[in-house]
Image 1 (cartoon, rainbow, N blue to C red):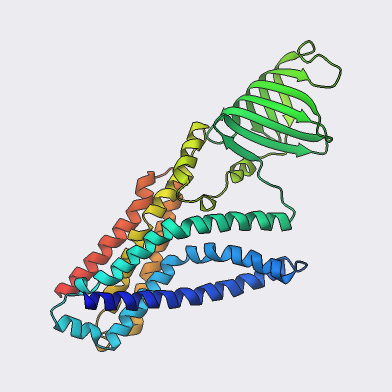
Image 2: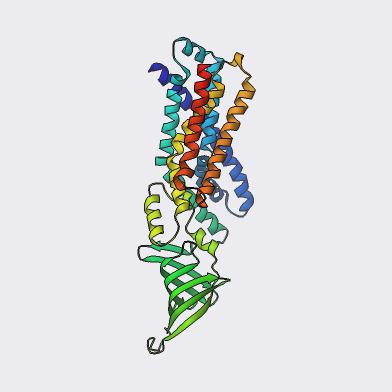
Length: 363
């Protein structure tokens, strides 16, 4: 156990050192970018924006930090002949990997249970602050247990839209209600339609009933029914979808309830389901990256070309990370099942690394 604690401590401190370097480096790069984007803002405000973006930027490169930490650890152990002594004592390469693999798994578990909520909150706040500084509007969509709400505005006033449910592509609303408000905030008109379809900058309403809410009039007495009605709209399908928020803006603990809420409202939650499963598979993927690094860098430095081995390990890690991201895109587009998109790359990476290690150990 003393040897396991020694390797675990070595790997942990290597990870902390490399992660600290990346935190400082990415923060400085982001600071320069934000100063160019917001030259009129006070420096402390820009620094606050940078600090909000630091968690997300480093969370994204966590696999890179892990594989670089593993490469640095095993190179140091190989050059100091500690791995040779360990094997001479009767411990195999796989047993020597127990401590680094355990630390990598714990890093993955802590990242999704503790760091993920922090990253989600900071990323959401960063997006809101940047939109405020750039003059952007707030979200136009909200989902509740009674349905979904939309908001659209123009120089003529605001319109609040409620629908019991919607199509998966958000282009058709069912049991829709439109309430038009004047620029002063007074209600002017209420429209209820069986369906409302968004196309070419307008809502196409079918089987609509209109009530005039102007002061001094009887809304029900003056109500009229129209089979088809067109209402202008500045909303687009992309803008409505973006209003849901990126999966990164939602804590892992809140994602299951949010996915259920989306599905109950009639929306497709595949994008969020894929992200949820990929986060759950992150610890396994980090373990696989440590094993990949070990497969090419655990040999004695005099018996192998160190530079080529490091290059192969890092490039293979990048390739596996790219395949994982590519599988995520396929899963979000519905071309492969959600669980296959999230779990196949980490499992395949783990099996590949284990196969390489077993082959080299037997050889």
